[in-house]
Length: 229
Ligand code: ADP
Ligand code: ADP
Image (cartoon, rainbow, N blue to C red; front, side):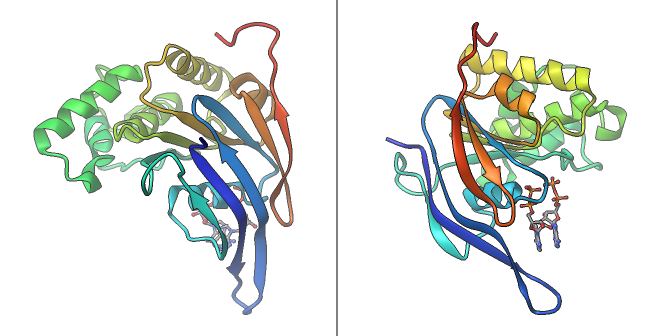
């Protein structure tokens, strides 16, 4: 049974002159358990809009996003290109902020945040502020904050695009190691990228997105000549 089913999603944004830009047109996408799926397309093709629809941050004009395996909405973790950290909060507080809306008791919030920090390789940096960290470490904070809610699905919007090549590679490898070793409490990852090499190296399956308007025009199954990690 699918984890997420996107069916016939269509979305337009209003413009200042009253006109509308159609960004997504009849998008269909299915996510299954235990897979990393890439959403590959040009900048501006509507990939972020699709992610936001899946996360429930926006309601598409037409079509549905359902979670057939769960009775109701599934918990979703989201990671952003520019990290979206709170600069006035420490690493620990930023990660705990992921649990703020969840009414988790203070004690447990701290415990879970520390576990996520440890998992993602941030131990020792609990009381640092984002501005004191490198880009790679900042994105680790973003990841920890997404993981702390134990999401069924991890949505990543260009998570490595703001990092230099080596940092991106290290973070990608660390993430894949955690995934392959089953150390992340996640059932599926959807990763948005415009980088085909990144998509191939990370994903089991790639959905190719067209622009103007955005829709899935092809799905590619990735067969690697050797194991991923
Ligand atoms: P991508 O993630 O593929 O770069 P986006 O979903 O961010 O694409 O954006 C698709 C198009 O919709 C772009 O032209 C963008 O400028 C526009 N857009 C995105 N968000 C909004 C918004 N909140 N209001 C108006 N236009 C938007
Ligand atoms: P990313 O590159 O991480 O996908 P963007 O720079 O495309 O992010 O968008 C950042 C934010 O600005 C998003 O919340 C998006 O909805 C909004 N946005 C993007 N394009 C437009 C637009 N043309 N008009 C209004 N808001 C927009």
